[in-house]
Each structure stands twice: as C-alpha cells, then as structure tokens.
Length: 575
Image 1 (tube, rainbow, N blue to C red):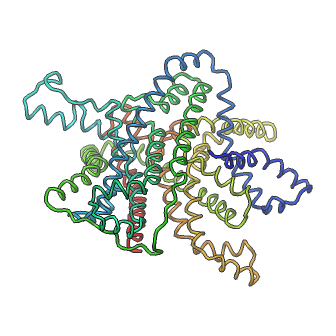
Image 2: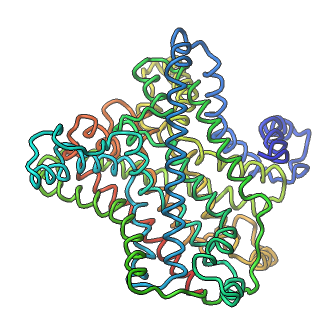
Image 3: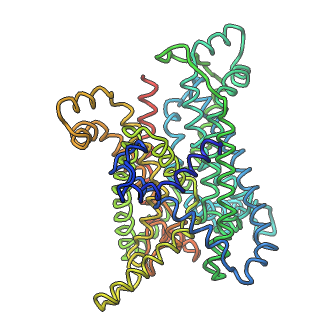
C-alpha cells in the first residue's frame, strides 16, 4: 500500500468520527470537509460497517488464547502456511499458463470452433471450486468411474495391482482448482489483447515476427499487468476456499481457522490465524499494485481496428482445439455431467424437504443481500461522483477491501461485534419490556447478511460507478439548472440511465451469495442450511450424490454471470 493510501486511510479511520461529532455539535461546517451532511453520515456508517470486523479481529487476536496458541504456533501454523503458499503458487502458475494461452489463441488465431471457445472458456466460473472438488473425487476415487473402468479393462482386482494418482492431495487440489479459476486470468488477459494497438501488432508482423515471437516479444509484455491482476484474483479465491481444501485433505490457513474455532473451541486462536491470512491478502494486494506500477500503455486509435490474426490449419489447429477444449472439459463438462448423473439416479434422495428449505434460505439471503448492497454501493458511487473530497475517495477505497478478505476472516471479525450488539438488544428488551428475545441478529441470519454486504459491496459499487461514468455531467447540470434538487436528479435522471448496470451488479452479488460457503458455515444459525452448506454437509458425510441437486442448482444460477460476461465480451469485440 502506498504512502498516500496509508495517509488517506489514517485520516479516514481516525478523523471521520471526530469530524462527525464536531459537525453534529455545530462547531464545524461539513462543507469544510467537502462533503454534504447526508453523505457524511452515510459514509460514516459504511466505514464503520467495513472496518468493524477488521478492528474486532485485531482485538480478538491480542486476547488470551490459552494453551492453544503455543500448540498452533509450533505445529499447525508452520505447516498451514507452507501448504497455503505451495497451493497458491501452484494455482497461480497453472492458471496463468491456461488463461494466457487460451486468451491468446481465441484472440489472435483462427481455427475451427474459435467462436464457441470465446464464451465457453468462461463456463468454469459457473461452478464453485468445492463442487468441482466433490465431483472430481467422485469421478477419480477408487470406487469412481475412472478407476472402475481401468480395473475392468485390465482385469485388476485391487488398488495394489496398479498405480493411480491420488486426487485427495495437494497436487490434486492444485490441478482441480486451477481448471476452475483460470477464467480470472483469461478474462483480464483477453481484454488486454483486444485493447492492444492493432498498429503495433501489424508493425511487428511487417518486421517478420511470427505468432510465437509476436506473443513473447510484444503481446505478453503489454499484457503483464492484466496477467498479474488475474493471477492475484485466482490466488485470493484459492485462499478463501474451505470446502475443496478440506475435502482434499489439504490443511491450509483457511481450514486451520475453521478447525481452531469449531473443533478446538478457541476463537482467539482462530483470530490469530486470521490475522496471518489478512497479512497474506495485504501482501497479494501489494504485489498486484507493484505489478501494475508504471505500466501505462496507449493505443494509436480511439476505435480499435481488427486485430491481425493467424490462421491455423492441420495439426496446429488440432492442438489449438485441444488446448481450449481441455479446460472446458475438466472445469465444467465433467463436473456438470457427474452432477446430472447423480441427480438422475438419486432424484428421490435429492428432492426432499431439506433441499426445498435450503433453496428458500439461499434465495432469500441472496435477494436481500443483492438489494442491500445495490443500495449501499450505488449511494457510495454517487457520493464519489458528486462529493469531490479526499474523505470520500478514501472511504470508497476502504469499502472495497472486503472483497479481498477471505470469508473465514470476515466471519471471525463479525462474530464479536454482532454478538455484543445482540446481547445489548437482549438486555434492553429484558429490562424495558420484560421480554426474552435471545440472540436475534445471529439466530435470524442478520450476521450472514452483514458478512455478504461487506464482502460483496465492491461489486455493487463497481457497477454503479461504471454506470455513472457513462452519464454526461451536462445532463445533471441541465437538471439542476431547471430547478431539480440533487435528490430528484438522482431519482429522475441518473437511476433510470444506470439501471442496466445496477441490475448486472445485483445479479453478480446474488450469484456469489448463492455460492458463498466459508462465512456461511461459520455464521449460520443452528439448523439453518443454504444450498452451499447442504452440499458441503452431504459431501462431508461421503454422500455427495444426496446433495447433487443442490449443487446443480448452484451451477445453474452461476451461469448467469457467464452469460453476462460473454455478452459484454461480444459487444466489446463488435465495438
């Protein structure tokens, strides 16, 4: 993080509340800060909502962990750190290889099936990593179809008669997760390839550069910032995962937080491990910013020309088809086919009251979180557009940090402030009205909604900011000239124009909440299941086929952002 960002963050966290108190007491005008009264109050609430879990996490981490922390520090933490590092390095390297190569092929080469691969390579985004992990074990385990076929073909009687790689291992988790997370690199890298100057590539071809030399000498250096961003996103998703790594038996930091909190009954120990994870996230963000530092490239035209392409034929075309088809096969088609097979043969076990209840809970939570984050994110984007101040800029940056924080870390940080507020409400209701309310916020699922808003607000803010950037300031100026207030201008002019962006952002939040597992496991009320936790629970009992319908439902919902992204990509190519 740069010094300017540190300064802005310090000003925001240390000065906002005191400035708000001074303003409420009438001793300072809010215009001194360049921010209106409504904006100041809302920004204070959003800031408090975002930083409260982080501050709570730090406070808990410095608490007394008893005899657990020495044991964690000497045995669990070193192994978890090394396992996490190897997992992230492996996933980062393999996603970079798959994402960059496929992005180059579908952007710069012509071969059979290219138009199909342009959008089909995004399909693994529809399946969460933990569902692919369950499907991979179901497919390649000893009793699965792959090894059963080998035994049938060669007449083997037991596993001692032949060798087969163990899927429940660190290499197995790296392979499976990479074929699910590579679209992050594919998306960012392909966007950069599409935006690269056609003139620069044409000059390189005129000078005799072939496709391989053009890729390594021109395209790859220009795309390096985008590759760093994509790999960082994939590594963050890898760090956030808990379902896949637990099922594979890979004890990462995320699993250690879960195990320390629930199995060792040490919240302080879990918070201390979570702070280590937070440091890893900050390191990744620093590496991402450093990778993009001083990387500024311009194009020679305002409207992109058709990029030069290489027509592949014969064995080269065959290799290109295989290179693009393999990630789709492993990352989407095989898991989806296993899910459909399980649903077909076990539909009576899947279609039951538990599934219907979990689907209702998921739909309610996802819908509520999508609407709430859309309201908060749009308000934040609007204030960032209209209130030009360092304060607003710093708060908008801080509000987006939740997406980078793993769900387990958020859950640990959220539990204490929500529990304290719950206890305060319960005591007040008992003292004032004589009612025993219990822990309303935790038992009602409000803690989960809080975690979803903090984690996914960046999506709604990004959607609102993108939509507002497309509106000419002259429209708003004309509205104000005609006597409209800023509120009426927002309602009558801005919101109707940015409605498509808001809907897209809300849909993305809806889908991510439907798939979210780490925070949901740790913050859900007793006997409360979502589709994600239902799949997780059945897989933990080695009965994945009974959760296949819930998993298939998550995949079907996850296709929504894939369709949106493919449509956006198509429009960008046509433009």
